[in-house]
Length: 286
Image (cartoon, rainbow, N blue to C red):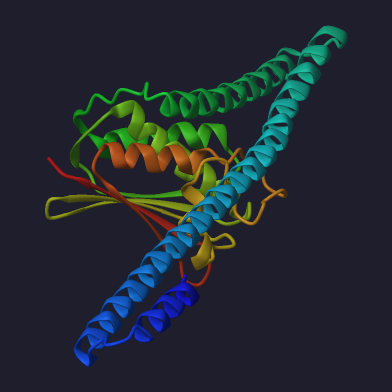
């Protein structure tokens, strides 16, 4: 196009009796047309490059999601097989052996514990599916979350009798929350801390009131979370560093993040010095 413009320009300049003023006007017109064409071409090229970048970004995001889903399927299969195998063992023991009343009680307690594990796993999977479909209603009400938190910790201690959970809970703190969702936040954060902490290290649960804010801290002494992964850990199916050595589905923190946001709260991850992580949940006090 530029070559054609130059040819046309040269032809006009060769016209006899063409004044200098006319030649100058013609030159300006052709230069303006040239820059207009170049500008339009540049805009088209820029839009094309932006489109290619967006497609690559979407493809990369989709590939990462598919990889996380694959990891999730592998993990959840293992998570299902483990309690099912344990349940089968307990039932076979009860059927085939002549156990004392105490031994029978122990076998039944173990079977009940594995049933609870299965129930919690199914609950996470179903809840994630309901969130995707927008089918999770929240009904906040004013409750004593100090009391609710203590009840939740007691339940977790019964499920993990050999683990140490340190409580530092300020009494008489009220907040407007959905009790079921609040319990889900606590359970998932504490369970996650127990998974990633050494078995001989305690997990600390603190609840404090700061003016009109209620702050929940879950502190562990595990491996910690690198800075570049702190935003990723709340994505569905994401497991830190492809944590194949740990139990889990990659759904717990995804659910925590969802429920905290539904309550207009904030969720922050901090470093726990000298080691581990701190999950901080901030809610409005009422």
